[in-house]
Length: 331
Length: 259
Image (cartoon, rainbow over all chains, first blue to last red):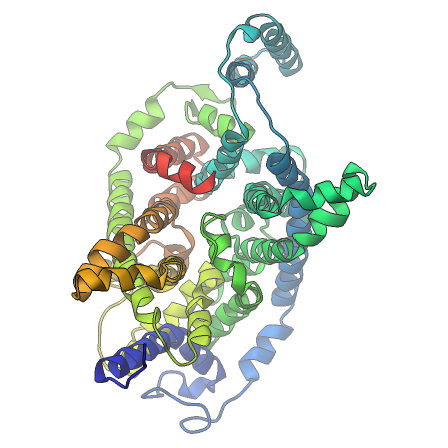
C-alpha cells in the first residue's frame, strides 16, 4: 500500500496530538503553579509559561523538600515500598513457579471442610470458648473428616482454581479488611510502625505477584529446564539458573509495578501509620486540614507524590498492559 | 481469610471501644438499609461507576482507534498517555485542585469559565468523574490498542474484497475481535471504580456536604470519625457483595482470560 497525503489523515494526527496535550495539561499546570512566586499564584492568566509570564522560583520546592515531616514521609514511603515489594517477590515467585510447573489436585470437599472448621472454631471463640481449645477442636474435627468421609468425594480442584482464588483477592475492596488489620496490628503492638505497613502491602500485592509470575513461567518453554536437568542441574539449580534468569525481565517489571502500588497505597497508610510511620500519601491526606489549601503547596506536594511512581511506570513501560490486566493481555 | 471472617463477625456486633462486644444479629444491616447516608453513598457510587466507566470505555476505544495508525512519534505519545496510570491517586486529586480551583485554577485563569467545580454538589460529582476519566481512560486505551495491534492486516485485506465500507470493517472485524478485551476492561474498571476512595477523598473530601461521599468513604468515615466498627464492617460487607455480584456475573469470562 502506498502512503499518500490526505486531509483526513492530517486532521486525525492533529487530533491525536491534541488528546495527548489535554492529558499532559494537569501535570504542566501543577508544575507551573509550583514554580510561581506566591504573588502570581492567582493572577497569572493564559497558559502561564515560566520566564515569559512570570519569573520561576524554586522557593516552594526548597521549603517543602527541607521540611522535616516531608523528609520523614519520603523516607518511610521508600523503605516501606522497597521492603514490601522485595518480600512480595521473594514469597510470590516460588509459589508462582509451583503453580506453573506442578499439578495440584486438592479435593474440593477437603477445602470446604477446612473453611467450615475454621468458621466453626472462630464462632466458638467469639462466644466465649477459649480460643486455643476452639482451634484445637476445629483442627481435630477437620483431620477426622478429611481422613474418613473426605475420601469419598471425587470433585477436585486444579491449579487454575487456585490461581483464580489468588486473583479474587485483587477484586476484594480493601476497606473490608481495614478494621481487622487495625485490630490485628494493635494486638501485635505494631500500630504506627513501618513493619505493619510492609506486612499489609505484602498481603495485598502477593496475589498480583503470583498471578503475573505464574504466567511468565508458563510462557517459558519447559524444555529449557528439562535440558538443564539432563545436563546434571538439580531441581533447584534448574529453577534458579534457568527459570529465574529467563524471567528476570518480567520479575523486574513486576517489582517496579508493585513498588508503585505500595507507594500509592493510602487507605492503610492512613489507618496504620498515623505519626512515625506516615507515608507520603498519608501526609498529603492530612495536609488540607492542617495548613489550609495553599495553592503552591498543594501543587508541590502532589508532584512530589506523583513523580516516583510515574518514573517507575516509564521504566516498566513494556509490561504495563500485562501488569494492569493481571497478565490477561500482553501488550 | 482471617481478616474477612473477622469483619464478617464484627458486622453482627455492636462494638464499643473498651467494652465487651454485643451480639445484635442483623441489626447493623437493618440500620444500613434505613440510613439515608447509605442510600446517598450508593447513589453517588453508582453514578460515578456507570457514567465514569461508560465514558472511559467510549473515549478509550476512540483513542485506541485514533492511535492505531501511522503517527509521528507514536511510541512517545503512547508513553505519555500511560503516565496517569501509576500516578498516586491522592496526588492526582491534589493536582486537580489546581485545575478546578475557583480562583486560580486552570479553568478559571486560562479559559475564563467560572464554574463552581468543587463547591456545588452536582459540579463536584462531575469533577470527581472527570478526574477518574483522566486517570483511567488511558488504561482502556492501551489495552484496546494492544488488542487492535494484534489483528493481522490480512483480515482487513480479505474483507475489503467483500465490502469497502469502513463502518462494516469496524463492525464485523474490529469489534468482534476486541470484544473479549472490552469485557475484561469493563470488569476490571467496574470492580475498581466501586471501591473508589482516594480521589474523592483528596479532591472534595466527600463534600460539599455528602455530595461526593462514595461507599468506601462512608465506610471509612464510620470507622474513623465514629469508631463504629460494627456498623462500618456491615457497610464494608455490603460493598463486598456488590463487587462480588459484578465479578461473578462475568466469572466465565475472567476464568477464560486467566487460565
